[in-house]
Image (cartoon, helix red, strand yellow):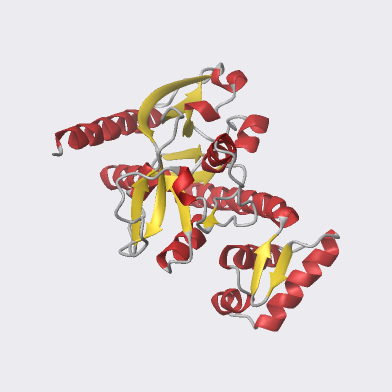
Amino acid sequence: MELQQLKYFKAVADIGKISEAAERLFVSAPALSTSISRMEKELGVRLFDRTNNRITLNTQGQIFLKYTNQIFSCLENANQELRQSLLQQGPHISIVSVNNAMWVNLITAFLSEYPQYTLSSSSMSLPQLAQHGLHSQHSFLLAYDSDVPDFLADELDSIFLFQTYPAVAIHKDHPLAGESELDIRMLANEKVFLPLPGYPLYMRLEKLFALYDLPFPVDNVYSLVIRLKMVSENKGITFLSDSATQVIPSPNIRYIPLATPFAPWKARMYWRKDRPLTAHETTLKDFCQHFYESLHQVYVMLP
């Protein structure tokens, strides 16, 4: 199997349409469809369910996408470290997180203040975290405290950064768009688009739906970009953390807090106890703590 096949597969999985994926990849739709079919034949399983003009991941496709994302994430990390090694620029720090979208503002602010640094960021699902822990290639893990297994927490030091809640992304013209808070039971008849399995929000939503004995829409799982595009076109609703809403604005989408009986999610920065932090890593750690302390002070002062 070639990397190009994986690239084609990932594009179709993310976009959900052969024609649009082919246009973005600058290949013909028949050629792209043939590549996907050849991959399915090589693996011996179907990765997509095809209905009308859409193509959606099935259970086997979701599993394969998880490992495909890992492959491209590892390649990107290797590419960044190789470039850093060749250019011999300033200090390089590698972090891994359970949700990259949460940390966009932090990373942007850090690199703006410390342009001599390079910073690579990759994502890890909860099953990966439970199985592999914090790899030696990463200086820090950014995650919610409830997502870190006990055995791993014992091996790590950490600092508290912030706490967050789930929110509903809903079209501005939706009848519920004016609500100040939404209960999951108010959304029972809505078309719901879920995040990909294996990540914190998916698992929390699974528990919340089960708590109120609501059917869990497991057939409608997409990447964040696809889910927000669906919502912006008023085709349904989706969920994300309120911290992510601050970095993903959209004029057509309203973000409304979701009522939940569960405790808020506490985000922390972790590093290994058995390896002292370098001066550069300490700089990033201190910056992160001050960054979120400053944000908290701003929110407290707002009317």
